Length: 473
Image (cartoon, rainbow, N blue to C red; front, side, top):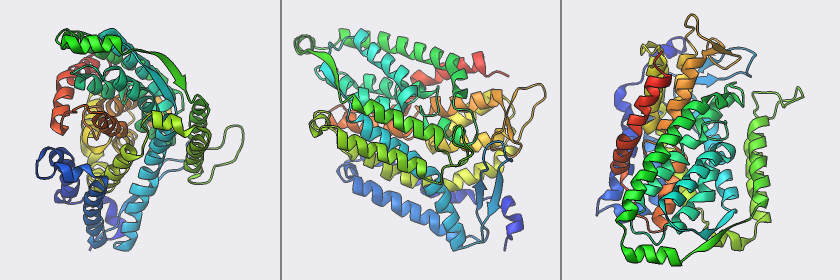
C-alpha cells in the first residue's frame, strides 16, 4: 500500500483514462449514428452520460490505495506553489472534486455563463448583404472584440448577426467554422478575460496585461485566416444559386444595436475577474477577496443584466439556456474524467524532455485540442516553471515550483492553448455554443471528425508557420 510520503511518485494506470476517452467518443460518434442521434440531442442525456463516466472516475479514486496530489497555490510573490497529498478513499474523492469542480469547473462555467447571459441581452439588429467582404468584416470585428469582452461575449454578440446575414445563402458551414476559429478562440489572445487559459495564468500570478505581448502571433494568425476565408467565401459565393443571391440582396435591414446597458455589466465582469482574485490583494489595499466572491460578483452582474434588459430583446435574440446547458453538462464530465490524464501529465510532465518553445507550443496545443485548453495550460505552465534555462528572460512572482517561468516558454504555452483550442469542438467552451446555436438556426455543422478535418486543413499549416517564425528556439 502506497504511503502519503510516496504519493507524489504514484502514476495512475493508463487504462483509467478510458472514461475520458469514452466521453470524447460519445461526443464524436453518438450524434452521427441513426440509432442514437435523436437520443443525444436532449441535454439530459448528455448530462446522464457525463455523470455516469464521472462516477466511474470517482469510484477509481475511491478505491485507489494512494492519495491524490492536490495543488495548493499561494498568492503571487509570496512563495512557490506546493502540493498536498490526501489520504486514500473518501478524502481522495473529496480532493478530486475540490480540484475538478470547485477550483477548475466552477470558475470556468461561471465566467462562460455570465458572459453568455449578459452578451445575450445585446441585440445586434440587421440583415446585411452576405457578401464575402461583409462576412470578413464581421469576423474581423469579432477577432478584435474577443480579447475585450471574452470569446464567449464576442460569440454571443455576433453569431446571431452572422447567421441572420447569411440566412438566405445555401452554403454557410464554412463561415461558422471560421467564426469558431477566429472569434471563439484565436481572437481572445490578448487579455486574461479573452480566453480561459489566460485566465488560469492570471490566477497563477501572470500580470493582467502580459498577454498583450502575444500581439504579433495574434495579428499574423488572424490576418492569414481572414485572407483564407475571404478567398474561400468568394469561390463559394460565385457558386451560390442565383435565386439565393437575389433573395439576399432584397432582404436587407440596417445595422442597429440595442441593450447597450449590458456593456456596463460586461465591464463589471471584467473588473471582477481583474480585481477579486483571492490569491492577490485588491488593488491599492492589503485586502484579499474571500474565495468565490469573484464568481458571486459575476453571477450578480448576470442577474442585473436579466433585471435591466427588456425580455423582448432576449426574445428577439432567440436567447435560451440550451446552448450553455449543453456546455455545462458536457464539460462537467470532461473536467472530472480528465483528472486521470491530467494527473499523469503533471507527474510525467517534467520527465517528458520538453525544453524548447516549439515543443511546448505543440505539446500544449495538441492536448488542448482534446483535454480542454484551460487545465492543459495549467499543466504545462507548471512544467515550464520547473525550468530555468541559461540566458532566457524569466517572469517572476508566479505560482510555480521555482516561483518563475521562462518567458519564451510561457508565450509558446499561451499561444498553443488558445490557438489550438480551435482544433476541435471540445477544445474551448464557446466552440460548443457556436455549434449548438448554428444548428438551432438550421445550419448543418460538421461532425466531430469533420470539424477536425477543417482544422487540420486550415489551421495546422498556419501553426507550422508560427513555429518557424516565433517558437524555433
